[in-house]
Length: 111
Image 1: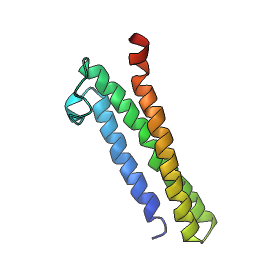
Image 2: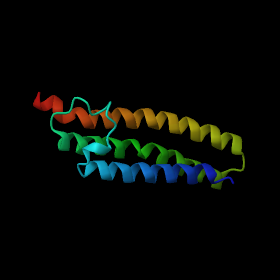
Image 3: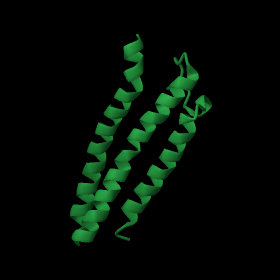
């Protein structure tokens, strides 16, 4: 059970990645209504949203890989979980900032 955290994060990241690919193909109807209310070019917005979600789904992959490596190196599960959760939170914030920057980069240049 020491690899359960990594497995759960990899499964979650895969589902999120599949969702981002579906949205990136231009399926505007898969985006929650609150986020897509002000989009003028729906297909372009869906592609940018899919790209941002793909960037955000890197966060659980980073944390899962680090947890897997730490589990192979050490037997102290408390330290492994603590470092893995901190990595998940920090990498999520960084990936969210990068994803949002990538999503709105084109609109700032056009505007």
